Image (cartoon, rainbow, N blue to C red; front, top):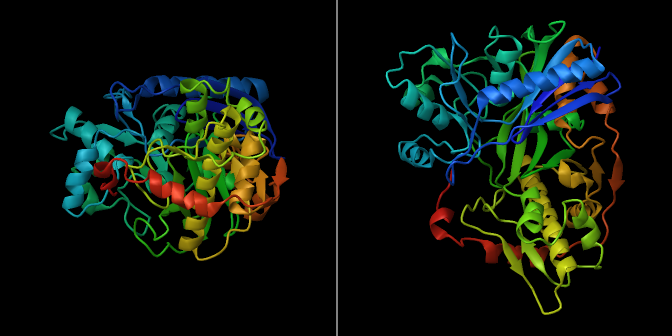
Length: 480
């Protein structure tokens, strides 16, 4: 009862086969980097993305198949529009980071419709206005999960799961269906929209693959990672430290009591829908995490590669009073200050490369602790344990700093990308590979657990954050 997973990230496509013991085999990866033709625009070749997904899926099956089902995990809110008859995209896909509709969002906000530019809603309207201004063509819209399912099924399936639909900006407050009022304000015909399905359950056959296994699980990347790290009940939280950082936690079967953002700066999300029942979650966002390590490597030349940041930081016992605020793209939860910028404080003539590298790792760790505190505020309970995945989870200096800043044990995922496991678990619930949520929770076996040591100075950190804020006041005034 093995499961094939196709995991489409922002930078590449991964496919692997997950066994009933939660081991991963036959992993294949293709890089599919987005384009940025001008600052603020992020596009991708949707057709090339689909080809890469089919290639890695077929390679994984050749290496480790056959399988009983397919699970899909994906970057959320990225937008594709294509012709229903030909299957050809009308234009490059628009990535979730794209800001071309920022002005549209501000205009709509003045009209009482609050949409952030990272959501799909205004991206979809933009593509329709350019390529179907009369709304007369037979077009399809989809986020990346929809686009991949369409190709795996050779055009037979036009669906999205609720965890993805809920971050398009076009779902009603109950989180169950497309909102006709929002669609009317955007000028989006309901005919272009995919059918909303459960995150676990059969939706169609992947006839493009050998054996035509059933597509049985779909979820956004962060929700997949949440499931993949066994966080299926309220309590433990997971943080994925990739280019940015996302903390997610299960909230419960009732929607959090705020519409768009809580007092702590977190967002309500649909963690999944199974058997028609919605499980809600909370999400806290760090706009830049691994980006800061890339900055050390690519722009400053202080490290040779990301992994060496640990070795360099270990050359000093502490940062020597140097503090770094990782706000290269602004601050997310809890401040949501788009005008904040990266800030390096406390430098002296004695500050050397190890102190600066350690300060950067500790700054990202402090931001991780910020996410925890904000989520506890909005959830109303304490988070006892953190589970982490993503590239930075393999950096021992960073993981220890996260434990020290948050004063909580940190459990490191046995696989770098837990999204693969989560998509497999959701598909496997449908096929009987796993009998229920307790079985999935029982698969969690961290690679290692890091206990907190002496706490990092959170008061000094708070002062540093205030120094970083509102560097560009006009951007700080924006709020979505």
